[in-house]
Image 1 (cartoon, rainbow, N blue to C red):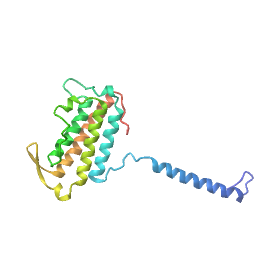
Image 2 (cartoon, helix red, strand yellow):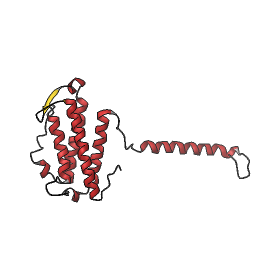
Image 3 (cartoon, helix red, strand yellow):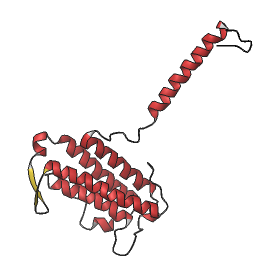
Image 4 (cartoon, rainbow, N blue to C red):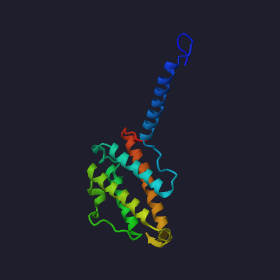
Length: 187
């Protein structure tokens, strides 16, 4: 280290090394605490599901309660109805693989569950149910043939459909949010 006089001063070099080292470690610790916004992506089904689930929940939280009843036009699902459609579809598709459909999720819930808190609760429960069920299914079970909507499929295909369906409607919800001046939290 050069001093103002242009000479090296060993007495100031050691404390500066310690300060520099402390700054490096502090920076590393702060960086380690920041969540990676892409965490899980590119890690197969589970990573993609975690990424999709996180974004859906963040978007659901970011949309104000009064916008849950908003719909882009007559006969089109409202914000709450789209979130509930995702939740109900998650359970219905998993039911085709042998997973139980919740007894407390009654017919008509897509239009009757409207409060932000209830919608987020059902959404979170359904996302967690998919994560848990998928993590417990064996490779052999993934290849099992099932019928859904009068079509042949595999259990693996059902889980892929669940992921695609959730992402499809997330795109719809992003459009709903942006039309209402709400920026998705991750963008």
